[in-house]
Image: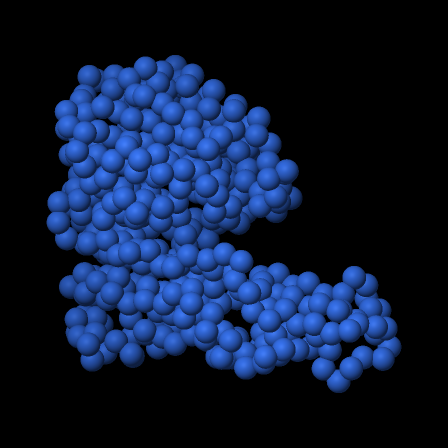
Length: 442
Protein backbone atom coordinates (compact mmCIF):
# COMPACT_ATOMS: atom_id res chain seq x y z
CA UNK A 1 0.00 0.00 0.00
CA UNK A 2 1.30 3.46 -0.92
CA UNK A 3 2.40 5.53 2.06
CA UNK A 4 2.88 9.25 2.66
CA UNK A 5 6.61 8.77 2.20
CA UNK A 6 6.07 6.99 -1.13
CA UNK A 7 3.98 9.92 -2.38
CA UNK A 8 6.56 12.40 -1.18
CA UNK A 9 9.37 10.58 -2.96
CA UNK A 10 7.39 10.33 -6.20
CA UNK A 11 6.80 14.08 -6.25
CA UNK A 12 10.44 14.81 -5.42
CA UNK A 13 11.47 12.82 -8.49
CA UNK A 14 9.71 15.27 -10.81
CA UNK A 15 12.33 17.97 -11.59
CA UNK A 16 10.22 21.13 -11.51
CA UNK A 17 13.29 23.34 -11.87
CA UNK A 18 13.10 27.13 -12.17
CA UNK A 19 15.58 29.10 -14.24
CA UNK A 20 15.96 32.85 -14.56
CA UNK A 21 15.87 32.31 -18.32
CA UNK A 22 12.31 31.12 -19.07
CA UNK A 23 13.53 29.34 -22.21
CA UNK A 24 15.35 26.82 -20.00
CA UNK A 25 12.27 25.81 -18.01
CA UNK A 26 10.78 22.41 -18.85
CA UNK A 27 7.11 23.33 -18.60
CA UNK A 28 6.07 19.72 -19.19
CA UNK A 29 7.53 18.81 -15.80
CA UNK A 30 5.10 21.17 -14.08
CA UNK A 31 2.22 19.60 -16.02
CA UNK A 32 3.48 16.21 -14.88
CA UNK A 33 3.61 17.47 -11.30
CA UNK A 34 -0.01 18.69 -11.47
CA UNK A 35 -1.17 15.35 -12.86
CA UNK A 36 0.65 13.50 -10.09
CA UNK A 37 -0.98 15.69 -7.43
CA UNK A 38 -4.45 14.92 -8.79
CA UNK A 39 -3.73 11.18 -8.83
CA UNK A 40 -2.01 10.97 -5.43
CA UNK A 41 -4.51 13.16 -3.56
CA UNK A 42 -7.97 12.25 -4.83
CA UNK A 43 -9.86 13.44 -1.73
CA UNK A 44 -8.25 16.88 -2.00
CA UNK A 45 -9.20 17.16 -5.65
CA UNK A 46 -12.75 15.95 -5.03
CA UNK A 47 -13.50 18.21 -2.06
CA UNK A 48 -11.56 21.40 -2.86
CA UNK A 49 -12.06 23.86 -5.69
CA UNK A 50 -8.91 24.13 -7.79
CA UNK A 51 -7.72 26.95 -10.05
CA UNK A 52 -4.60 27.23 -12.16
CA UNK A 53 -3.25 30.78 -12.07
CA UNK A 54 -0.55 32.49 -14.16
CA UNK A 55 0.23 29.35 -16.09
CA UNK A 56 1.14 26.85 -13.36
CA UNK A 57 0.46 28.35 -9.92
CA UNK A 58 -2.19 26.40 -8.01
CA UNK A 59 -4.93 27.75 -5.75
CA UNK A 60 -7.24 25.40 -3.85
CA UNK A 61 -10.22 26.47 -1.75
CA UNK A 62 -11.59 24.22 0.97
CA UNK A 63 -14.97 25.63 1.97
CA UNK A 64 -15.43 25.91 5.72
CA UNK A 65 -18.30 26.93 7.98
CA UNK A 66 -17.34 30.58 7.42
CA UNK A 67 -15.65 32.41 4.56
CA UNK A 68 -14.38 35.15 6.88
CA UNK A 69 -10.67 35.45 7.72
CA UNK A 70 -9.58 32.25 5.98
CA UNK A 71 -6.39 30.32 6.59
CA UNK A 72 -3.86 30.28 3.74
CA UNK A 73 -1.20 27.58 3.64
CA UNK A 74 1.57 28.31 1.15
CA UNK A 75 4.38 26.42 -0.54
CA UNK A 76 6.02 26.47 -3.95
CA UNK A 77 6.35 23.79 -6.59
CA UNK A 78 9.63 24.89 -8.16
CA UNK A 79 13.15 24.04 -7.08
CA UNK A 80 16.56 25.50 -7.87
CA UNK A 81 18.92 23.88 -10.40
CA UNK A 82 21.45 21.24 -9.39
CA UNK A 83 25.01 20.29 -10.26
CA UNK A 84 24.58 16.48 -10.20
CA UNK A 85 28.27 15.63 -9.79
CA UNK A 86 28.35 17.56 -6.48
CA UNK A 87 25.74 15.28 -4.93
CA UNK A 88 26.41 12.03 -3.10
CA UNK A 89 23.05 10.71 -4.35
CA UNK A 90 20.89 11.38 -7.39
CA UNK A 91 19.35 14.83 -6.68
CA UNK A 92 16.06 13.65 -8.20
CA UNK A 93 16.27 10.05 -7.05
CA UNK A 94 14.68 10.71 -3.64
CA UNK A 95 16.82 7.98 -2.08
CA UNK A 96 16.23 7.15 1.56
CA UNK A 97 19.64 7.01 3.19
CA UNK A 98 20.28 5.62 6.66
CA UNK A 99 17.94 3.92 9.10
CA UNK A 100 15.94 4.62 12.22
CA UNK A 101 15.79 8.27 13.33
CA UNK A 102 18.67 9.11 11.00
CA UNK A 103 16.89 7.93 7.84
CA UNK A 104 16.65 10.87 5.45
CA UNK A 105 15.28 11.54 1.98
CA UNK A 106 17.96 13.06 -0.23
CA UNK A 107 16.53 15.18 -3.05
CA UNK A 108 16.36 18.67 -4.40
CA UNK A 109 13.23 20.19 -2.89
CA UNK A 110 13.15 17.89 0.15
CA UNK A 111 13.08 20.99 2.34
CA UNK A 112 12.79 23.84 -0.15
CA UNK A 113 9.87 23.55 -0.61
CA UNK A 114 8.18 20.30 -1.58
CA UNK A 115 8.61 19.12 1.99
CA UNK A 116 6.00 21.65 3.12
CA UNK A 117 3.84 21.35 -0.02
CA UNK A 118 3.43 17.60 0.29
CA UNK A 119 3.01 17.72 4.08
CA UNK A 120 0.14 20.20 3.61
CA UNK A 121 -1.55 17.93 1.06
CA UNK A 122 -1.11 14.90 3.31
CA UNK A 123 -2.77 16.76 6.17
CA UNK A 124 -5.70 17.95 4.06
CA UNK A 125 -6.17 14.55 2.37
CA UNK A 126 -6.55 12.75 5.70
CA UNK A 127 -8.81 15.39 7.22
CA UNK A 128 -11.11 15.38 4.20
CA UNK A 129 -11.25 11.58 4.31
CA UNK A 130 -12.27 11.79 7.97
CA UNK A 131 -15.16 14.11 7.08
CA UNK A 132 -13.65 17.13 8.82
CA UNK A 133 -15.07 20.56 7.93
CA UNK A 134 -12.89 23.55 8.90
CA UNK A 135 -14.38 26.42 10.87
CA UNK A 136 -13.06 28.87 8.27
CA UNK A 137 -12.23 28.50 4.60
CA UNK A 138 -8.78 27.09 3.95
CA UNK A 139 -6.78 28.05 0.88
CA UNK A 140 -3.74 26.20 -0.43
CA UNK A 141 -1.54 28.53 -2.51
CA UNK A 142 1.27 26.82 -4.40
CA UNK A 143 3.32 29.16 -6.57
CA UNK A 144 5.40 27.84 -9.45
CA UNK A 145 8.23 30.37 -9.77
CA UNK A 146 9.19 31.48 -6.27
CA UNK A 147 12.84 30.68 -6.84
CA UNK A 148 13.05 33.27 -9.64
CA UNK A 149 10.89 35.88 -7.83
CA UNK A 150 8.20 35.22 -10.41
CA UNK A 151 4.56 36.22 -10.71
CA UNK A 152 2.73 33.09 -9.54
CA UNK A 153 2.02 34.06 -5.93
CA UNK A 154 1.43 37.67 -6.91
CA UNK A 155 -1.23 36.57 -9.39
CA UNK A 156 -2.93 34.50 -6.67
CA UNK A 157 -2.98 37.51 -4.36
CA UNK A 158 -4.45 39.66 -7.13
CA UNK A 159 -7.22 37.12 -7.60
CA UNK A 160 -8.02 37.00 -3.87
CA UNK A 161 -7.92 40.79 -3.60
CA UNK A 162 -10.40 41.14 -6.47
CA UNK A 163 -12.73 38.78 -4.62
CA UNK A 164 -12.49 40.81 -1.42
CA UNK A 165 -10.76 38.05 0.53
CA UNK A 166 -8.60 39.07 3.50
CA UNK A 167 -6.89 36.05 5.09
CA UNK A 168 -6.82 35.91 8.87
CA UNK A 169 -3.63 33.85 8.86
CA UNK A 170 -1.04 33.06 6.19
CA UNK A 171 1.74 30.51 6.76
CA UNK A 172 4.57 30.06 4.24
CA UNK A 173 8.06 28.57 4.27
CA UNK A 174 10.68 30.29 6.39
CA UNK A 175 12.11 29.53 9.80
CA UNK A 176 12.23 26.04 11.27
CA UNK A 177 12.77 24.33 14.60
CA UNK A 178 16.46 24.72 15.40
CA UNK A 179 18.93 24.35 18.24
CA UNK A 180 21.95 26.50 18.93
CA UNK A 181 21.05 29.19 16.41
CA UNK A 182 20.98 31.83 19.16
CA UNK A 183 24.18 32.02 21.23
CA UNK A 184 23.79 30.40 24.62
CA UNK A 185 20.27 29.04 24.01
CA UNK A 186 20.13 25.25 24.00
CA UNK A 187 16.34 24.88 24.14
CA UNK A 188 14.79 24.00 20.74
CA UNK A 189 13.30 27.13 19.21
CA UNK A 190 10.66 27.47 16.51
CA UNK A 191 11.83 30.44 14.47
CA UNK A 192 8.62 31.99 13.12
CA UNK A 193 9.30 34.71 10.61
CA UNK A 194 7.18 37.76 11.41
CA UNK A 195 8.89 39.76 8.65
CA UNK A 196 11.41 39.27 5.90
CA UNK A 197 14.20 41.42 4.60
CA UNK A 198 13.78 43.34 1.40
CA UNK A 199 15.82 42.44 -1.65
CA UNK A 200 17.28 44.51 -4.46
CA UNK A 201 19.91 44.30 -7.16
CA UNK A 202 22.22 47.23 -7.86
CA UNK A 203 24.24 47.23 -11.06
CA UNK A 204 27.53 49.09 -10.81
CA UNK A 205 28.92 50.10 -14.20
CA UNK A 206 32.23 51.71 -15.13
CA UNK A 207 32.96 52.70 -18.73
CA UNK A 208 35.99 53.62 -20.83
CA UNK A 209 36.93 53.92 -24.50
CA UNK A 210 38.58 50.51 -24.64
CA UNK A 211 41.57 49.44 -26.68
CA UNK A 212 44.40 46.95 -26.49
CA UNK A 213 45.38 45.54 -23.09
CA UNK A 214 49.04 46.23 -23.85
CA UNK A 215 48.49 49.97 -23.30
CA UNK A 216 46.10 50.31 -20.36
CA UNK A 217 45.09 53.66 -18.85
CA UNK A 218 46.02 54.50 -15.27
CA UNK A 219 42.55 53.55 -14.00
CA UNK A 220 40.81 51.16 -16.39
CA UNK A 221 37.11 50.46 -16.01
CA UNK A 222 37.80 47.11 -14.34
CA UNK A 223 40.03 48.73 -11.71
CA UNK A 224 37.52 51.49 -11.08
CA UNK A 225 34.82 48.87 -10.58
CA UNK A 226 37.06 46.81 -8.31
CA UNK A 227 37.77 49.90 -6.21
CA UNK A 228 34.04 50.54 -5.86
CA UNK A 229 33.41 46.97 -4.73
CA UNK A 230 36.29 47.12 -2.28
CA UNK A 231 34.87 50.28 -0.74
CA UNK A 232 31.50 48.57 -0.29
CA UNK A 233 33.18 45.58 1.34
CA UNK A 234 35.22 47.72 3.72
CA UNK A 235 32.30 49.89 4.78
CA UNK A 236 29.34 47.57 5.38
CA UNK A 237 25.91 48.84 6.37
CA UNK A 238 25.64 49.82 10.04
CA UNK A 239 24.61 47.31 12.69
CA UNK A 240 21.39 47.63 14.66
CA UNK A 241 18.73 45.60 16.45
CA UNK A 242 15.49 45.75 14.45
CA UNK A 243 12.07 45.20 16.10
CA UNK A 244 11.71 41.53 14.97
CA UNK A 245 15.18 40.67 16.28
CA UNK A 246 14.52 42.56 19.50
CA UNK A 247 11.33 40.52 19.96
CA UNK A 248 13.23 37.29 19.28
CA UNK A 249 15.91 38.02 21.87
CA UNK A 250 13.37 39.14 24.45
CA UNK A 251 11.36 35.94 23.92
CA UNK A 252 14.31 33.59 24.31
CA UNK A 253 15.94 35.55 27.16
CA UNK A 254 14.41 33.36 29.93
CA UNK A 255 16.04 30.30 28.34
CA UNK A 256 19.52 31.81 28.09
CA UNK A 257 22.14 31.45 30.83
CA UNK A 258 23.47 34.43 32.72
CA UNK A 259 24.83 36.91 31.81
CA UNK A 260 23.17 36.50 28.39
CA UNK A 261 19.74 36.47 30.02
CA UNK A 262 20.29 39.93 31.47
CA UNK A 263 21.86 41.18 28.24
CA UNK A 264 18.91 40.03 26.10
CA UNK A 265 16.44 41.52 28.59
CA UNK A 266 18.07 44.96 28.56
CA UNK A 267 18.52 45.65 24.86
CA UNK A 268 17.78 49.34 25.32
CA UNK A 269 21.25 49.48 26.89
CA UNK A 270 22.97 46.39 25.51
CA UNK A 271 21.62 46.49 21.94
CA UNK A 272 24.75 47.99 20.33
CA UNK A 273 26.95 45.39 22.05
CA UNK A 274 24.69 42.51 20.98
CA UNK A 275 24.64 43.80 17.39
CA UNK A 276 28.44 44.03 17.35
CA UNK A 277 28.83 40.48 18.67
CA UNK A 278 26.23 39.06 16.28
CA UNK A 279 27.99 40.71 13.35
CA UNK A 280 31.15 38.75 14.19
CA UNK A 281 29.64 35.37 15.11
CA UNK A 282 28.82 34.21 11.59
CA UNK A 283 26.96 34.88 8.38
CA UNK A 284 23.47 34.14 9.75
CA UNK A 285 23.74 36.30 12.86
CA UNK A 286 25.46 39.08 10.91
CA UNK A 287 22.50 39.13 8.50
CA UNK A 288 20.13 39.56 11.45
CA UNK A 289 21.66 42.89 12.45
CA UNK A 290 22.49 44.71 9.22
CA UNK A 291 21.60 45.18 5.61
CA UNK A 292 24.01 43.04 3.60
CA UNK A 293 25.52 43.65 0.17
CA UNK A 294 27.57 41.23 -1.91
CA UNK A 295 28.79 41.23 -5.50
CA UNK A 296 27.38 38.19 -7.28
CA UNK A 297 28.12 38.77 -10.98
CA UNK A 298 31.05 40.36 -12.77
CA UNK A 299 31.27 41.28 -16.46
CA UNK A 300 34.26 42.71 -18.28
CA UNK A 301 35.97 42.55 -21.63
CA UNK A 302 35.18 40.14 -24.45
CA UNK A 303 38.75 38.81 -24.51
CA UNK A 304 41.78 38.48 -22.27
CA UNK A 305 43.84 40.97 -24.30
CA UNK A 306 41.07 43.56 -24.71
CA UNK A 307 40.29 46.51 -22.43
CA UNK A 308 36.72 46.44 -21.19
CA UNK A 309 34.66 49.31 -22.55
CA UNK A 310 32.13 48.43 -19.88
CA UNK A 311 32.82 46.72 -16.55
CA UNK A 312 29.74 45.75 -14.58
CA UNK A 313 28.97 44.09 -11.27
CA UNK A 314 25.66 42.95 -9.86
CA UNK A 315 25.39 43.61 -6.13
CA UNK A 316 22.71 41.69 -4.24
CA UNK A 317 21.45 43.71 -1.30
CA UNK A 318 19.20 42.34 1.45
CA UNK A 319 17.46 45.11 3.35
CA UNK A 320 17.05 45.01 7.11
CA UNK A 321 13.70 46.09 8.51
CA UNK A 322 13.75 49.90 8.56
CA UNK A 323 15.91 50.33 5.45
CA UNK A 324 14.47 50.90 1.98
CA UNK A 325 15.56 50.49 -1.62
CA UNK A 326 15.97 54.27 -1.82
CA UNK A 327 18.02 54.58 1.38
CA UNK A 328 20.27 51.66 0.46
CA UNK A 329 20.89 53.08 -3.01
CA UNK A 330 21.84 56.41 -1.49
CA UNK A 331 24.28 54.73 0.90
CA UNK A 332 25.90 52.67 -1.86
CA UNK A 333 26.40 55.87 -3.87
CA UNK A 334 27.92 57.67 -0.87
CA UNK A 335 30.27 54.80 0.04
CA UNK A 336 31.52 54.33 -3.50
CA UNK A 337 32.06 58.09 -3.81
CA UNK A 338 32.80 57.92 -7.52
CA UNK A 339 30.60 59.77 -9.97
CA UNK A 340 32.12 57.74 -12.81
CA UNK A 341 30.51 54.56 -11.51
CA UNK A 342 26.91 54.39 -12.65
CA UNK A 343 24.43 52.84 -10.21
CA UNK A 344 21.15 51.42 -11.47
CA UNK A 345 18.51 49.36 -9.64
CA UNK A 346 16.64 47.11 -12.11
CA UNK A 347 14.40 45.66 -9.42
CA UNK A 348 13.91 45.75 -5.69
CA UNK A 349 11.37 45.49 -2.91
CA UNK A 350 11.38 47.06 0.53
CA UNK A 351 11.30 44.87 3.67
CA UNK A 352 7.92 43.39 4.47
CA UNK A 353 5.63 44.79 7.15
CA UNK A 354 6.05 43.17 10.56
CA UNK A 355 3.27 40.80 11.64
CA UNK A 356 2.31 40.76 15.34
CA UNK A 357 3.75 38.11 17.63
CA UNK A 358 0.77 38.28 19.94
CA UNK A 359 -2.90 37.57 19.40
CA UNK A 360 -5.03 34.71 18.15
CA UNK A 361 -3.26 33.96 14.82
CA UNK A 362 0.10 33.72 16.59
CA UNK A 363 -1.39 31.49 19.31
CA UNK A 364 -2.75 29.13 16.64
CA UNK A 365 0.72 28.59 15.21
CA UNK A 366 2.34 28.22 18.64
CA UNK A 367 -0.40 25.81 19.71
CA UNK A 368 0.12 23.57 16.66
CA UNK A 369 3.87 23.54 17.34
CA UNK A 370 3.27 22.45 20.94
CA UNK A 371 0.67 19.80 20.10
CA UNK A 372 2.25 18.27 16.99
CA UNK A 373 5.97 18.77 17.48
CA UNK A 374 6.96 19.24 21.13
CA UNK A 375 5.48 21.32 23.93
CA UNK A 376 9.01 22.19 25.10
CA UNK A 377 9.79 24.05 21.87
CA UNK A 378 9.92 27.82 22.34
CA UNK A 379 7.98 29.68 19.64
CA UNK A 380 9.80 32.90 18.93
CA UNK A 381 9.49 35.77 16.45
CA UNK A 382 12.22 35.82 13.83
CA UNK A 383 13.40 38.00 10.98
CA UNK A 384 13.52 35.88 7.84
CA UNK A 385 16.77 36.51 6.02
CA UNK A 386 15.68 35.45 2.53
CA UNK A 387 12.68 36.38 0.43
CA UNK A 388 9.60 34.20 -0.04
CA UNK A 389 6.29 34.27 -1.89
CA UNK A 390 4.63 35.33 1.36
CA UNK A 391 5.70 38.93 0.75
CA UNK A 392 2.86 39.21 -1.78
CA UNK A 393 0.27 38.33 0.85
CA UNK A 394 1.17 41.26 3.12
CA UNK A 395 -0.99 43.35 0.75
CA UNK A 396 -4.14 41.51 1.85
CA UNK A 397 -3.34 40.20 5.34
CA UNK A 398 -1.85 41.60 8.53
CA UNK A 399 -0.92 38.14 9.81
CA UNK A 400 1.68 36.64 7.50
CA UNK A 401 4.15 34.19 9.02
CA UNK A 402 7.06 32.20 7.67
CA UNK A 403 7.62 28.83 9.30
CA UNK A 404 8.20 25.27 8.10
CA UNK A 405 7.42 22.71 10.83
CA UNK A 406 10.65 20.75 10.50
CA UNK A 407 13.41 20.26 13.08
CA UNK A 408 16.55 20.97 11.06
CA UNK A 409 20.20 20.66 11.94
CA UNK A 410 22.73 23.24 10.84
CA UNK A 411 23.99 20.86 8.16
CA UNK A 412 20.48 20.38 6.80
CA UNK A 413 19.90 24.13 6.70
CA UNK A 414 23.20 24.71 4.93
CA UNK A 415 22.22 22.21 2.21
CA UNK A 416 19.38 24.45 1.01
CA UNK A 417 20.21 25.65 -2.51
CA UNK A 418 23.38 23.56 -2.25
CA UNK A 419 24.20 19.90 -2.79
CA UNK A 420 22.87 17.01 -0.69
CA UNK A 421 19.60 18.68 0.31
CA UNK A 422 17.77 16.26 2.59
CA UNK A 423 15.18 15.88 5.32
CA UNK A 424 14.88 13.18 7.95
CA UNK A 425 11.82 10.99 7.45
CA UNK A 426 10.61 11.22 11.05
CA UNK A 427 10.99 15.00 10.99
CA UNK A 428 8.95 15.29 7.81
CA UNK A 429 6.18 13.03 9.09
CA UNK A 430 5.83 15.11 12.27
CA UNK A 431 5.42 18.17 10.07
CA UNK A 432 2.22 16.69 8.65
CA UNK A 433 0.81 16.69 12.17
CA UNK A 434 1.56 20.39 12.52
CA UNK A 435 -0.56 21.23 9.48
CA UNK A 436 -3.37 18.95 10.67
CA UNK A 437 -3.46 20.65 14.05
CA UNK A 438 -3.22 24.14 12.56
CA UNK A 439 -6.16 23.45 10.23
CA UNK A 440 -8.18 21.84 13.02
CA UNK A 441 -7.70 24.91 15.21
CA UNK A 442 -8.69 27.32 12.46
